[in-house]
Amino acid sequence: MKHESNDQTKWLCDKCQRELELDKVKVRYMEGNFEVDLMKCPTCNQVFIDEMLALGKMKEVEEGLEDK
Ligand SMILES: [Zn+2]
Image (tube, rainbow, N blue to C red; front, side, top):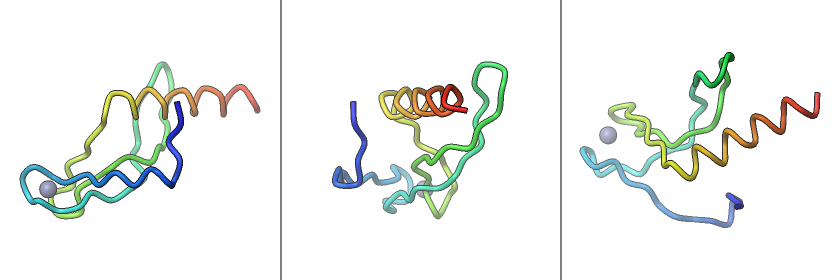
């Protein structure tokens, strides 16, 4: 599973019809808190977590921890 920058899928907020922007969002996972880039609506600040994306990000987080 890859989420590279060439994946230009546009995400829109259901409410505002605004294009979502990547933003750092604090998430709690397992016993720790992490900052991950998630899609967020710049207008209403609703964070959209696609399940596949979330799993991919969490895997990145896990792998990042193992490297250290
Ligand atoms: Zn919105």
